[in-house]
Image (cartoon, rainbow, N blue to C red; front, side, top):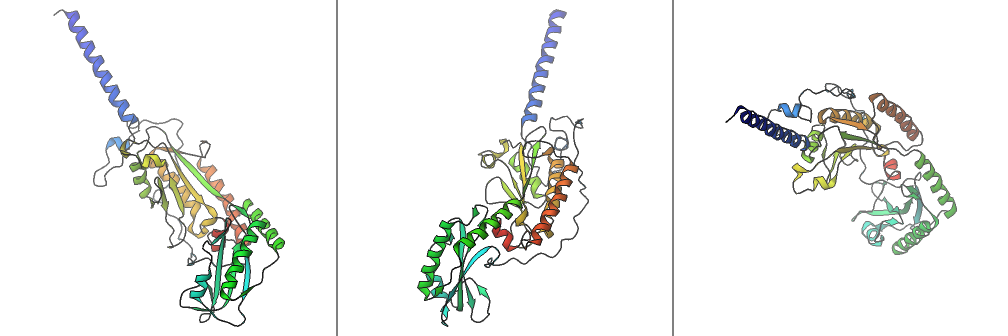
Length: 357
């Protein structure tokens, strides 16, 4: 074999090796990052840049200002969750049902309730004044009640109570009152509808649902990788595929934060090959008490996940959010909390949770 043939054979081997190496590198780059078993030490690949080149720096990378050793200040006292939100004149139409001195059993009141507990898009409820405890409560079998009242919510996120809904409320309440032998005393429809519109206008101007997007810089993530990183921050699986929540510190209250990604990826037959390129973090402000420090938790979760998953924090439109911009959002949020407090609709209270639902 001549030297030329030997040279060509060597060159061909190098080219073939280069093609194989490139294909291997490209395959690793495009494979979604996987969850790391907890009993296995993290490999250099897991610590490296997702392109497979350890230590590669991004000149335009914005590092999150997250201190993993830092801790949130101690939480303040949180409200005890109510078993059932009580009717409140601030956000409900309330109609007394006179009983003429009679006592109605809880069994009779429950039997007289309408089949649906809604009027249009608004919750409908009945309460009784317990003969023993003297507290207003949802009727309970075996108890006796000396007074009854019905109510419908004035507004929620679907809008204000309208005339048609008020008329339906009157019919349902009258039917209930007839069944228990009572007489309802309805307020003026136009006054209550006007109150509903006013409350709806206030709620519309003070509703806030914050969200940050976390987008992959390089390699995509597998659902298992996302779930593993989020679980390290206290998130647990939600009911809907592709959703996780950060539970409240008080049982029975709404979750503090939500985290969601493509549900189709979560339901894939082979989740390890499903590619997730963005994760949404959300906070429903009126639903969570400010003493839970929900915004601080939202901010720190976004920073921690961005660092651990090599992602960039953006708004819904994909514009990067720098730490100082996020802090400005937090400052504005404090004014909203103060306004809700001043109107007896503190974030996380039963009234706020019902109004902003």
